[in-house]
Length: 219
Image 1 (cartoon, rainbow, N blue to C red):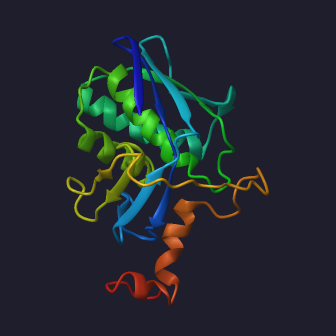
Image 2 (image 1 turned 90 degrees about the horizontal axis):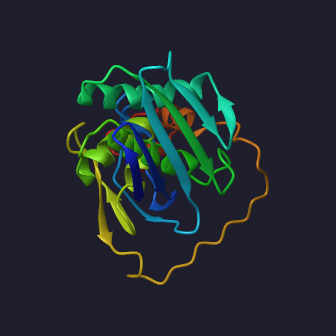
Image 3 (image 1 turned 180 degrees about the horizontal axis):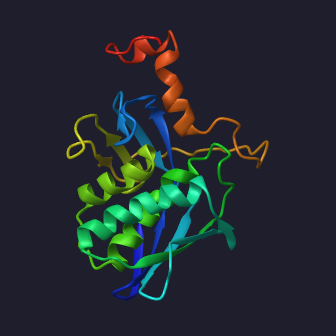
């Protein structure tokens, strides 16, 4: 991720989506987005989300736009949940304007929520005047989207299970460690019928989940 900060209440950050070699599927805790199993991933360097967060006393509520289109409803609510965590840590009660853009389709299976919440966490924390380390940023991003925790460190990453405090992602190798190329074929730019959040809620109902997570039981 990269960061550009112009004033203490405005900051811009860039983050990349990631693709998992060993994917996490299902949560031990859906509210905290604690994964049922650890995972390994790599960041996709050519794909990016750029997000600017501005806190202002003049705003009457949080506002979100993606690719210059306003977003309301569930999408805005998820962003507000992360902003609330930032405001709580910073002792700030101002609303925020969040402007985000992607150079790849969102909601189509290319982990746009991972890069989105990683960029939001870095830009939001910086705009609020917080100086968070990488682990704290990974933890914050996880609250918006589990896989976003893996888009905070660079290169190849491991995200561990654990508690709210300990379940974070760390870099296990730099981007150049393995010469791997990821090929993406976009067959549709429409949003997935079932998003990842819904899929994680459904995971415990699968008879196959027990093989991935010995502690699970089909519902």
